[in-house]
Image (tube, rainbow, N blue to C red; front, top):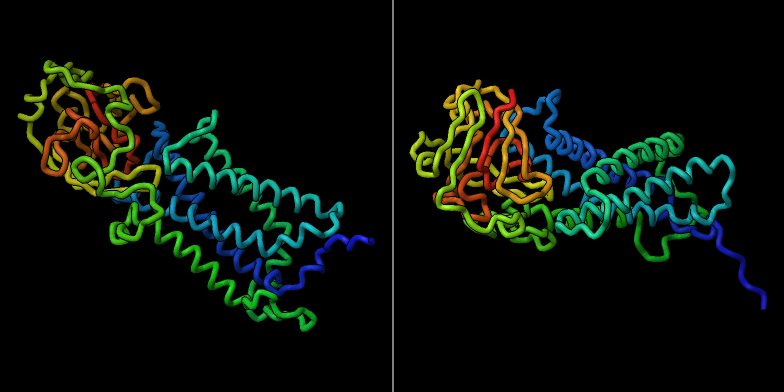
Length: 376
């Protein structure tokens, strides 16, 4: 019995695989990638705290917005990527030619990098890292690979994209039969847009409280946790099991200071209404009370615009020691917080003292602080 001929690109005659469809969905996917890349770049530089890089402290909730957009755009990119691949998969059956090798190579790199980026990004929101490589550096490197491959792909496909960019060129050859699924191209666009919107709405509630009740896919509920605030890293995980009765807070600067918790509570207290905004995408506003960092710097004879090293009692970890750039140390909203939402800090929230600052990721809002070191 003679076997049927293998399929070719012409075997897939549905208008849902028309270049116009691929162009429209490609625009949506590109927009999601650009937003995800730019907000991710901002998050990366905020966490670097390099001496040459000055990140503004205001708007105070800027990081909350950008990181929420980062996770949202990455999430909705998943159905958009799947839809884009479905529209163009018949190209896999086209006979490869020498001139198409660059195009196919860029597509291979782009799809592989995006799939890996979205996969490890999602697992990061769950705080699960079943791989031997460092997440932060790998995530950052993959982002640049995706952007490079995307630019190459757009450059190669630019003539086709331009010819199908406008709706006026959206004519389907009469030789093409209707879609066998009964789904029109307009219906496909609505289905893809609806799927992306549904996925987005069911996750964005972790950073936008109004959508909290429908955030069924969000790994965090922002108002669930000790004192109404989630906890990523517990005191047990950080190796902080108890606080000694003779605990003291020290400042290493022009003058060396050592203060007990009672003495810290006796200093002039300030209040800041700031969110905890984590790199995993969730955020929650809270009311903090404590001593302004710039007031502590004044007490030890250091300028308010000093660069400060913050040292935690945490045992190990990437963020057991962090730095406050001068603009953060001088901001009146930046506190050595002693109280949260009207009560003394819970141990999981950093008792006896933690840092809270505007426009700053949660991993840098150091908990269990016991020493500040003035660097400059």
